[in-house]
Every structure is written in C-alpha cells, then in structure tokens.
Length: 467
Image 1 (tube, helix red, strand yellow):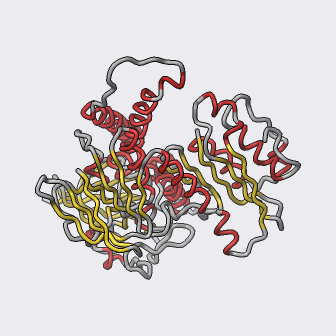
Image 2 (cartoon, helix red, strand yellow):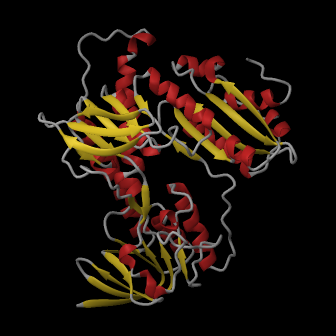
C-alpha cells in the first residue's frame, strides 16, 4: 500500500544541510516533511565529522599521556590503547547527537520518513522503505550529500583495504598503515594513527599534501609529520595493491624515481567524495546538472533550473563542508519564503584536524597572488605565545592577508593550537570587512592563544610586540 501525502516543503536528506533547513523552515511556520534513507545527521554526524573528531581527541589524549613527563607528570608502567573502548566512546557520542536531532524533529513537528526518495515528476516524489509513500510538495530541497569516490586500483577490494567509513570502526590497531591520498581525510587519519603509535605512510599524487591550502601551510604540516615520523611520498601514484604470503598489503607506487613497494598491515583509501544523485531519478524533475554531470547546478539563491526545487550541500559540489550545507539550507528556506537571500562565500572557514590544527578563511595568499591582487601578508609564529608554550604546543603560525587597494583583511590562516576555535575571529573580521586599525583596537585576553591574532595584525602595521 502506498501512502499519499502533501506538504509545503519536502527535504530529501537529513544531513547537516537537510535537518537544519527542516528545523528553520518549521520555525518559520512551514509544514515540513524530511526524507532520509539512513540515519538523521547524515555522513557528517554518523560516519564523518563527529566520529573522526572523536578519534582525533582520543589520539591526542594518548599522545598527551606519552608526553606527560614534559608537564612534570611521571607515569610508571606501560601505556596502551583500548580501541574497543575508543570506538565505543565514538559510537556513544554519535548516538547522543542523533537522538538530539530526533528530539528536535518531534519538538518542531517535522514529519520524518525513512526510505529512498526518487522523483516521479517535478512536484512529486516516491519513497521506498519500510512503508512506501507518494509525496506532493509545493517546494523541494535536495540535500542528499556525497559518497566516497570510487577508485580504480588493482587490489582495491582486498580485505585489508579500508575506506574512511570502515576505518572509523576499526577495533584492532594495526602496526602499520599506508594511506592513499594526502588530502583532508588522509592527513587527519595519518595523525590519528600516528598518535596511537601506528607506523604511517602517506602516498599523494600531487607534489604536496593538502593542496587546498597555501603552500606555507601544507609545508608546516609536512614538517610536523616528518618530525612525528609520518612518511609522506608526494608526486606518487599507486598502481596496485597485492596480498603477501603473510597476509600483509604490498602497495606498489610509481614516481619520477621509478617503481617502489611498501608493506603494511592495512591500507586506507582517502581519495575524496562525490555527490549523491544516482537514485533520485532527477532527469524527470527538469533539474540540470553541472558540466561534469555529477552535481546539481544552482544559482546563488540555491535554486535549481526548476524554480521550486533547491539543492544544498555536497550534492551541489560548491564547497563540501557541513557548516556550508547548513548555511545553504537556511538560505534556501528563506528563498522559499520569498526573502530573496543570496549565498556569499567570501568568508567560509575551513578546519583540518591534523596535529597541529589548520584553519583558513577567505582568500589564500597563493590564490590572491595568482589573481594579481595587490596584497600585504603578515605572519607570526606561536613560539612567543605564553598559552601555547604552557600547552606544549608552541608550533605553527598565524597569517593575515590584506588587500592594499581596499585596506580590508581578505584572508587568514592559522596553523597551531586552538586553530579550529580561533578561525571564528578571523571569519568575523573578514565577513564584516574590518580594517587593520579596527583589529588593532580590539583587546585580546591574556594569556590565550587568541593573542596571536592581535600580534599578527600589529605585525602588518608597526610591528608585533612580542617577536
């Protein structure tokens, strides 16, 4: 039996874009139906952002205990990691947050339907699940997210080869792991495993890791990785994976120096993600795709080529970040409500949870120079920051980029302690078009890592006080 429904707003996908849009729409008086084929929270909450950062914190705790002597703490006996407990903690945090979203759905009277959604026509979708539905909607938001990209490498299906999802449930730490891909996912896992005491190799096709950030930022992380004995092989291509007689992985890769082999217990493939559109039957909706044929084309209001259908988040392939998806979701709902809201990507913060953390916002130094923008760049290390020294984290730097024509700060980067929190200050500066003098007039609390922002602003003018 097929149940028939009508709704003001139908949202397909309950990740950070979809569920936030649903709550925002409900608070604005719309009747909302949310369709999800798996779990509320999507990839980010269940098999992405939150689980990964939980592992990051556990690995940092492991590293902190190992370095306890630096803080004057003597620990006698062996230190070990119980990965079953680490994974149990991760699962508990994830479930707590999923339950929180379930509560918010009920609180805001949002109808949640579980199943696979696909278009019948531009106004109607069907949902196939435990119960089947036919839903007619005035407006529709597609928020189906992304999936792990497929990789064509011989041996990719061998039992010791992991992807980012299976790596999050690994209860037995390997002695060694080779990570294919030195992007965000690959480098975060590289430091997670290294902090847990695993021997780590990273193979990256490009000439450096983390190509989405400035060269000086990625160099800083690569230097740290080298100090931590993470072995990075850049400008290298994996050609095949084989199984040795003792059930280990033999990874063959090539670069300009020839063909090489690595042997490790596990292999993690961290190549990237691509939009989820295959099962939507999207062609009957009139929604156009981008030129690559893999993502949904939208304008700056998040509207597709079909006026009452919007798309947000990873499925648009604009910026694959959870907080961007949430913001796009709110913008899409505002436009459903005829508020004429446009997305502005001038000040989008991006955080990479390596050790130390990386956070960037606005235009990068390399990009600004490539575009011919007249800029001034200032950079201050954490070595003179009292709080960073107390944390035993006096590494990395803060950087500001000023447009000399406008006098405004247009970009910034932080590599170091608390970068993930400090970037919000830089985001506020850039989003509000603050000038250097306005930052100089701001009082930063002492002793905190935030003082590095005040120092790097002074460095651009009269010169920093403490360097």
